[in-house]
Amino acid sequence: MLLSACVSNALAAEPTLSEKLALLAKAYPEAIAEIGDGALILRGGGAALLIDDGRLKSHVEKLEVGDIEDSLSQIYPLGPCAKPPAADFDPGRIRSEALMKRLYGDSAARVRRDLVTVDWFGERLSVTGRHGVARALQAVEAELASRPKLKRYLVPNAGTFNWRHIAGARTLSVHSFGAAIDLNTGFADYWRWAGRGKIGTAPYRNRYPLEIIEIFEEHGFIWGGRWYHFDTMHFEYRPELIAIARQAGSSACR
Ligand SMILES: [Zn+2]
Image: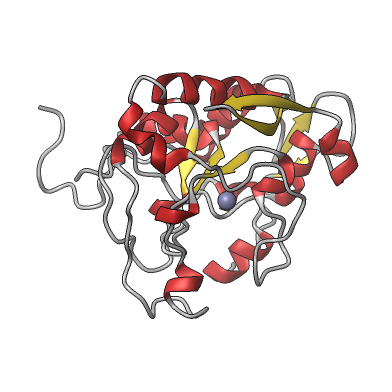
């Protein structure tokens, strides 16, 4: 028995920043050459990306202008459990837009060049072929296909690639990079709808079966249903956060 019941934050041990960065590099080996002195060195040239801009930020500022360190700051909880997220707990919703652009492309046209088609229960999804995203999503579909009772939650899908900003924000949605999928909106709950646009004004709710979430997580996708700014139909490919969660022993079921 490694864990005692008194572990209050559901973590076995939070990895250090350098451990997190090593897992980030391992998640995108075709893009990240190495972790340099305070910066990420990317393959194919271009400027190194600053890991930590040193600025003290509020949660809202992290969401707006997160750096790489900010994007790894909250540990994502894994597993077939869901509960209302604590205030400002948005694991994965903080992103480094600079890094996302270097991973997938910095314009709609550039991202589009790498889109491939994934079969989703007979629907055709446009997803980026970079960093194993399309392969991972096809594996999710194959695994879900063996459980026909889940199909009604999965189709019609509500979109994959779409170069756009997050509603009400200036930051790009991960849909812009072809690395996210929204499931059937018929079961969706979204903080902005539920709370009439104001965070914290409506109770959290999830109507998707948790085995769906577990399968996505196994293949490197995080779920928007774990966020204080919840978006329960949304999944995005963030294998670095899944790897960090595994190393941290982070569970949604504690
Ligand atoms: Zn989405």
